[in-house]
Length: 277
Image (tube, rainbow, N blue to C red; front, top):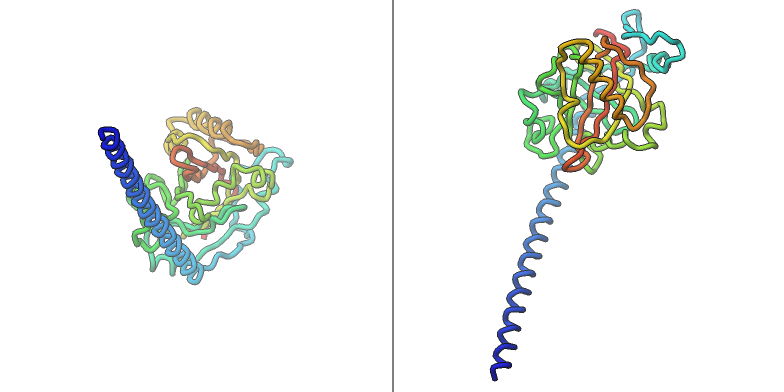
């Protein structure tokens, strides 16, 4: 009789555990399903925003003129610099974009990626992590310049961020830059930027994946020596040798995104050509 009672009690405990586990599993499924649905809806809104931007924007190739300025020309004519400066700039009219968002400060295009977007600058580096171009809430965020940077002129290091979205929007395709298929193609070593005041061309000199750190996010330097030390650090991290000569007179851009919860993917490029509007 006692054995039978113990067996019934044991079965009751097993049943309780089973019900508890099933409840947890169902809860997790509902939770996961909600977040998947939310992620899909946010992607849809981002794609709609991109389509809207494409309708009101024109990104035109611009050939060199008498006003085109070469920046810090390489001393040797065999330097890849002299091939890249032949590439056309891009020119963007920001009139219509400004009507949607006055925070827009430029347009960014990165060869070998899907990155071909206007970028904004907020009062901090958090707002556009959770708001899209039209300022509506969206955890996909948007492409934005570091609030510390001068949007009218480039600092020694100008930083642009965006989320690394799995659907390859925003900086999702920036992850390409650490793949052999990307860095083995020299046509990819170019970044183009257009702002309201000038159009610029940038030559890639470093791409890498790294544990989250802020040591590449410095924008002010106490001396040429400290700046050169900084540039040397960035160049040594690169997964590929881009054979770029760097000097204390160079200005660079840094594009940064998340690879996962602990790592970042970063691209650095130096200014090689500019033309005022």
